[in-house]
Length: 456
Image (cartoon, rainbow, N blue to C red):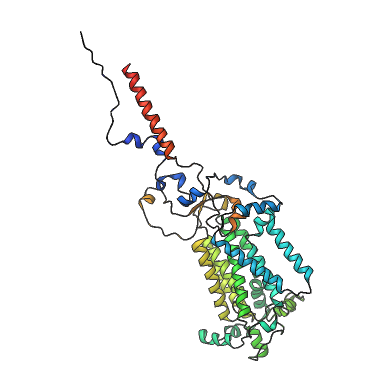
């Protein structure tokens, strides 16, 4: 009886396991540092807590809130993931309530109207998406104009000699008296442009420029830094009241008292030149006539210069010129000492440095308009050259966030772009271990079926 031997032809199995590593099921579970769709996510914990979502920048206008229902805002607040940075909203609310409380009690209608307007604007989604990021600015304005109602008996004493003494110690001379000692109509107009016009128009102009040309998310950070810097500045002026240079020129070093009228100083010449009352009445009845230190005219201009220079380095020379221009104007018009400008500059730099380090989106070369950004990089990151960067990949730890252009206006993404304000940018998620094992079993079954067919 002849014996036949059956030879079963099988595939050669290499010990390196290269086929398993290159199989589709394995490729889906590439480590996060080499996985391109995952490199835009913030961390593994955020991916586990938040569902995946796909962003559509071209559909951003459709994602703007158009609802007038207050219940929608309550639902957003109920599902919001709160962070430590949300404490700032409590601070803004505190200043707002304080400002409304100190307003003359004989005007309950005005107080109630203002409070109702604030609540309505914050409660309706269609208005809160615009009003909430700029809330510190509106609170600053209310805080500044209502400070006139603070009782005189609870205010600190007015310092008359401190600023002139600091001026002599730091600079050896009084720059305000030096620049304002010789005047003429041409110089008056040249000083009036930045001090009397530019100071009030620049916030709107800078906001429009930043919104169109800077990285998405820059405008809310700019608005919050501007609002909070002015709130802090007015608070310092109330707690540390000092007389400006025009008081020294009119009254010398005599003690100052609350209730004394302010003065337009050099701006009175502008009213006389045009024959109108543009500044005389407003400065005479100013809410904070003894708020010389710090100079918010200088602080605002320096803050604008920092933001514009960061977003558009090519305008650095113009920003330096404008800051020097308005600083000279404040002293020429006899409104501030040079030490006031130093104080305003320190406050502006402090707010910009904090915003730049933690929350300000970094501009990208080659991007002219905000709509050209596919992602933003937040804050300062130490760039250490690694193998991932050499190969063209970016570590997962790098703080990159996908762009939803409506985020700049929504309630959730206006809180300083906190850790809970951005979803995952990847439309695909890595394969789970179950799917991987299922793919391995399918590969083994396909190999066994091929072996059976060959054996037949």
